[in-house]
Image 1 (cartoon, rainbow, N blue to C red):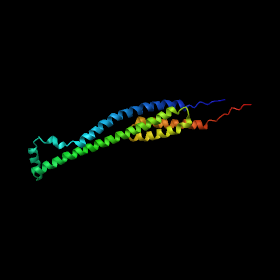
Image 2 (image 1 turned 90 degrees about the vertical axis):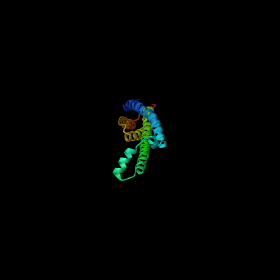
Image 3 (image 1 turned 135 degrees about the vertical axis):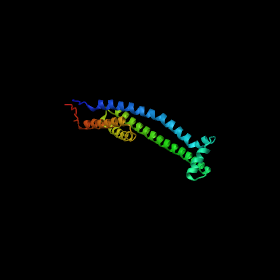
Image 4 (image 1 turned 30 degrees about the vertical axis):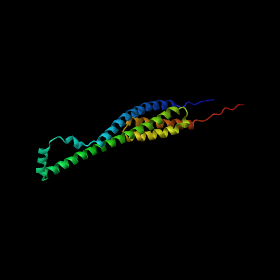
Length: 180
């Protein structure tokens, strides 16, 4: 019986292992960043920055602004307090966006990791590579949206090799052993 060796199996395994390493590092690095950013959101959401300026004397500066704008000193002080409070809310909003981005990056890394693991596990059984190919494509899209170009390229190559390995398996003629 002639058994044809699939040339894409070994390269699928090697690139999937490399993708596992990169996706794991990305996922591991995302976790502390998410924790620290979440703590920053909690801090900036709960702190009142105007309390930091309570003991400071800005009367001279407020008087200059009041003279230039025609407002009273108390109106200028109230406007500055609102400005500082708005700045605190803006910083909290920006950090919330960063946390969302980091969570999205971690989800993309997890999907890429799952696709790479399935590529390694199922590389010797090309008929089962369809799910690995789908996860590789989804992982490539998610990692591409978060700017992880190296992992994006790895996931695309893994998906292409998975498809070629499956196609090679499908087009290889099957031989039956006939007992005469």
